[in-house]
Amino acid sequence: MTAFDAQRPTWDEYFLMLAKLAATRSTCLAFPVGAVIVKNKQLLATGYNGTPSGSAHCTAQGYCYPGLSSCDASITMPSRAVHAEANAIAQAAKHGIATAGANIYVTLEPCLSCLKLVISSGISEVFYETPFNSGEKALVRDSFVKEGLVTLKQIQLSEATARRAALFLLNPTSVARPAVAEDHLTWDTIS
Image 1 (spheres, rainbow, N blue to C red):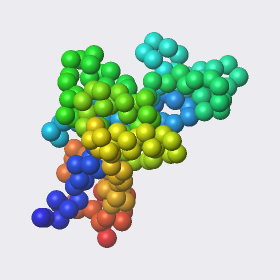
Image 2 (cartoon, one colour; image 1 turned 180 degrees about the horizontal axis):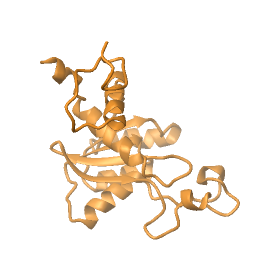
Image 3 (cartoon, rainbow, N blue to C red; image 1 turned 45 degrees about the vertical axis):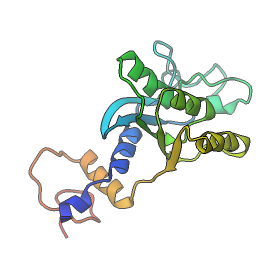
Image 4 (cartoon, helix red, strand yellow; image 1 turned 90 degrees about the horizontal axis):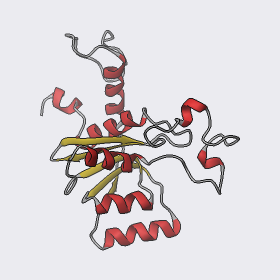
């Protein structure tokens, strides 16, 4: 392995970063979440959470419901958002893309409704960054795993990968550049 190979993100990190980029499109005031569906190391579909297509975005109007700053500020009002996983699966379906045997990378562990949708769409493995389910919900989730319906794995970006990704996001990438020291955030700085 060369020094350049060591700087490349793993496949899991790569797809998690794409899910995190999808989350930047979220229109939800409570939790920005992103998801990508992948099969054989190829991206099939992306999704982020927000209101249904054609509905006013919570971020645009500054609230979810009149008098309610965000959906998680109420215990009675349901969220207006379509979850990131559901949007990614819907995008795949809308474009005739089969998800059977695929994996999904999500910034937040799927809620039970989305996990059931993931399983029913044939997605076999879920990679997530932040845990969500606890208590009885975790028991239901774990029963699906025990039945062999799906596998779940929590993953994280390494700090080195995140720093390198920041370089690519903050600087032009399609230009010749000198080697970069790992602890610097510009192409121009070499230690």
